[in-house]
Image 1 (cartoon, rainbow, N blue to C red):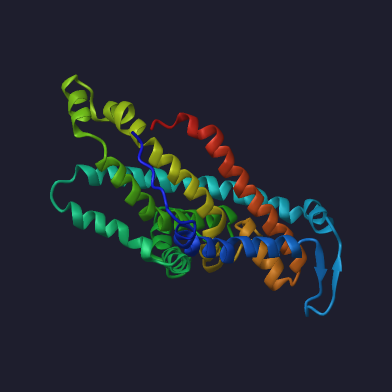
Image 2 (cartoon, rainbow, N blue to C red; image 1 turned 180 degrees about the vertical axis):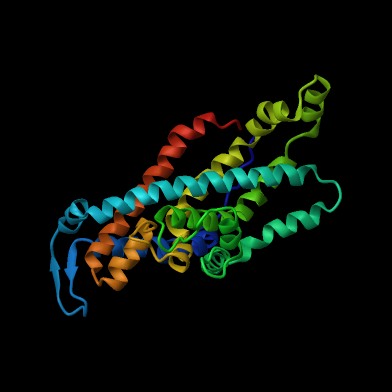
Length: 293
């Protein structure tokens, strides 16, 4: 029988919800409302004059070829970051779950990168792949690959994808390890007795039981790739070369803070918010059907 908590007074549940409601109002509802308001106005760089233009800012975006390019770059970037981050973290979690000695040390070392700020993570990878003094760039040159992400757009995209995914692997790893620990060992042992190998046990038993965790991390990683990777892009490539790594959230910063186009940047942020909400709803609508709870 399901147990329900019944409050005798109306103010106690409201008081308990007040901190979360305050955070939501201050850091989401208020900025979102401000962006919606600014998206229908044109404001000069000094803020002395404001003119209502309606949907003109949004229509201008669809005529801007650079905005369409940023949309495509964001799609490629987000898919690569989410796929790489989830696959690597799942592989590491499976290995960690099998370790008997030194498991705690191994898991702790893999969790540490999550404490690194995105900009710092980007700088670390930038130094490793620096064309002049980078260790990895030097090793790549020894095998015949001339690495220079400052001139090559594909190499720049590869670098920021690796840096952003590396930053998120630790977060995914924590949840995958917890998910693996919750799987009854008796199921795996029974499959082993029936003759199923490690790969077959993972495909038929382990991964289906991990689908709730995987679905949650998929939603989180997509949101991370759209928003929280700004620090990585800014520190590593600044959107270059030739806008090859300029994702939507970085274009909002470029047009708003550097280009002083507040109305256009607000319109971009509204569209970006709508895209993320639509992707999240689509994932809950279609992807969740394959989740085994």
